[in-house]
Image 1: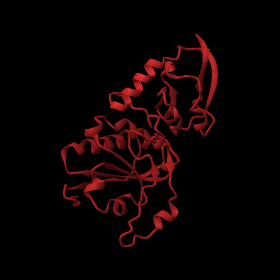
Image 2: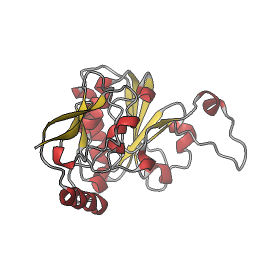
Image 3: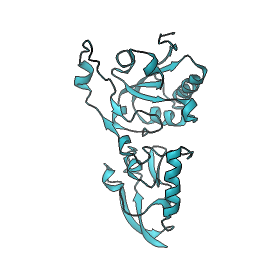
Image 4: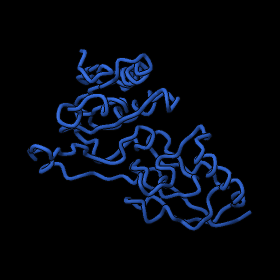
Length: 238
């Protein structure tokens, strides 16, 4: 049938992922650092994604396309809620996953006084699965790839590791995904200056370290990197 549907200009797309976050139906995926309309029958033609695009890469067109399948959209939304979708959309349509970069200059210089710790998180989102593969905050970044549990086990995480870095976190055991491809795209597509991997001593954290090491290797770049292991009682082991 001929109907109104969105069109994404890949040359204008900067890979920010905001359109995928804005699309409540889950019609858009980030593929190779670009937004793509992957499920035409999920697109209702209302264009919630249009105002989210900072580069004007999204427009309407009328063309042959499958009819909008509301039942399929509802099922996919329920699947996302229960975590049964294998391909999780960046942001999952959740406003809380919208990309933000925090003011760094004053934040990095801010002193820590007794009883008043300072957050060193430089951007949002920070979960690997929710991050776009290209974003302004990656430009010239020192990248911290940290296992979720490290922030709870190690008391000085913000000051000793997060300060001055872009922090991205994940858990290969709970997410049950291989982060290698996503991390490769982030390192390959951005000017990353260094990579620090902070993991727990438990064996399952080895998956995060391997993914980061594979990403560094597959990116084709030579970037300084290090691995720091935290014990379960909060000590730095190496």
